[in-house]
Image (cartoon, rainbow, N blue to C red; front, side):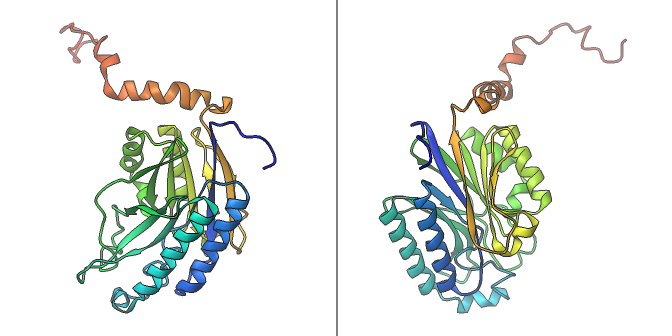
Length: 287
């Protein structure tokens, strides 16, 4: 590392890989960037929506194709990702499909791997797009949180950027950062992600495929709503490393002041204690 990091700091990487219908090629790129991120000192790296499986409508050409999808190849690839995470002591969040035992469409998921080489959780996209509901995917039901070295993370996928309740729920669950994985982070997504980060005083790490990087590269937004770091908007795989530090003076206001105060404000007691019980004052038809 180029400098000594305080114990309270955590480095995370957001990736952009080329996503194809070739699971073997996808996992090779994912494993390569996991290795590079670990060498760069990152403790966690997140990849985009469908990074391993391919994303429905883009690489999976019709809903019927799920019946011929090579689930065993994806399972083997997931095991190989778990293995390299354990070998290099790094967490990884990887987009892929998750099948049901019956004929229902799969979940659009993020697989969470620990630095011990274990699959510790899976986030299933809850707010599907209208087209995703047309046989592509089955919606998930719950948020997911997990911890890395004292920092708490949540997960969100693509169009969920348009639902503020996803991010406010994670704020209430005490996350420090949301790992946002999408098949593209266009300008309108960037606008709302910056707003979610600022309003909830959280970091947001956004991962995207290489083929969409020209519209918005991978990167991390700070709890003040400003970009901390971004990958080059270039058609080649890469990642950007950001340092999460709750004691960074630059984030004193959002983390130490605004976030705890807003939590109290949302509960409402600080206002109820000073509300007027003057009925005359409450007559809104009077000057």
